[in-house]
Image (cartoon, rainbow, N blue to C red):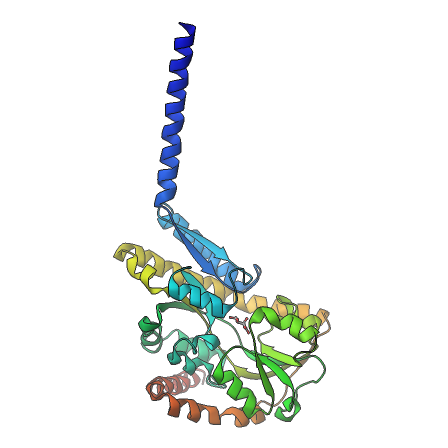
Length: 341
Ligand code: GCU
């Protein structure tokens, strides 16, 4: 009798356990993991913005989607993660506009040096839906769509041994650029030799003198420790290249209208939180870099501008569909400078 009671109890307990296990796995089965890759550290404004995005999706669609963020090039360099996003192996990646031009030439536009006259002009253009939306949604054939942009500051040259005070100082130097034909051409016009490579390779290349310098915003000096090796940072301000968040097209199209609206809200939160964190992060990086022994230089930017401006004509002649966008950007400049008067 005792044996029978025990057996029945065990049966009862096991069936309860089974129930809860199957409920749990059923729940997990319904949750779709969303993989987001980027190449920055966990301190970077982009990671902070993505955490806010993750939180928002969890709060609003947590029963269906689980956002997982992979920082620090964990899933590969940006070129790799764009490819993974195209095939749907991952769902989103943050890519510099610089490398996107080789996936879709519509992105050549934001790689032009001295395209924006100030951060205010840059932000006004990137926030202008009429200019941005047609670009963001025009890359269907490339398997991805851009969902928002992120601030990546102003790009300047930094070097190990040679302070850059005028374009001539770049002559013969090997400077790392992103994997972008426009950037390679820009360096040619400045008389330097361009070494295209992924972001994660730059520190070792600087340290082993494979390159003499690179170009980036100030966070590269601290978050990526380039300031340990490169001691001169010159504010020649040649580019403001946005980071673009791209999503796999099939995934985006699989969302219901309601879900898409929630994701859109999430993208806006990502944009806002990242940009809000930017200014403080730059101030902090300048302080930290100074403590690392980096010297900041403020050269006259006009000679740099003069050397590379022919690139605007060159790119527009080779890619005529960009002309109206370019004109809208020039127009925006007038608007922004009028507002400032
Ligand atoms: C910046 C930018 C990154 C980019 C990097 C680079 O950090 O935000 O998206 O990858 O520059 O120079 O490669």
